[in-house]
Amino acid sequence: MKHTPGPWKAEHYNIHPHIEIWSDNGETNTRICYLQDHVVESCANANLLAAAPDLLNACKNIVWNRNDATVRLAMAAIAKAEGTNS
View: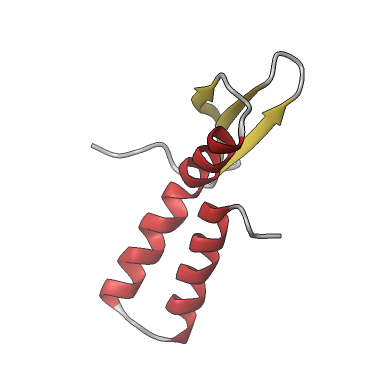
């Protein structure tokens, strides 16, 4: 079974506060998840969900060929998951 291709992103909505996770890979735009609450924990969960494809890709790259580029990829994925990326 395959997951919906990334990248995924978290969209925060202030009207009827909620967060949606979307896949936007240039070919399709698919809603992955809907989080009804807009509290701090929901925002952190949204960041982690949106980073899932990046984290999976980074982990695979580290396992298959560890080098500086794969470490940077993993660090970027971790930052996205923690909501600290720019």
